[in-house]
Image (cartoon, one colour):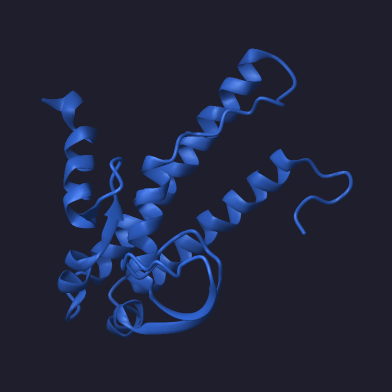
Length: 169
């Protein structure tokens, strides 16, 4: 359990963010010039889904809320993580104590950690893109739209990248 006596939720969030960054950094390093790692990222791995709200496999499975045995590909996890990081609003820390500058710094730290995580995910995908089937598999991943429909992840990524470069035009 993450909320331990004497530990704040903010400290737990910081620890989890650090773990996520370390894991993504390691994955990026492991996939650099490593064909076997690329193959592992496209292989289906079974796990027990305990009602996760993230649809890792890209299917619009209506049974996603039930506990079942599912399979997942590493590239799907990375694609969905990028989507979640870039579409979820940054949590404002309403319970933050201290000055407004401290709250702003906390928000800035979260933005920086999200940016770093997204870059590590994109670098990992770039490292494995030449492996067989990666491009096809990435082209099949879907994400939800604001209207509740599904959109190809690669289309969403292209739109998102275009938005990121608007300031340079």
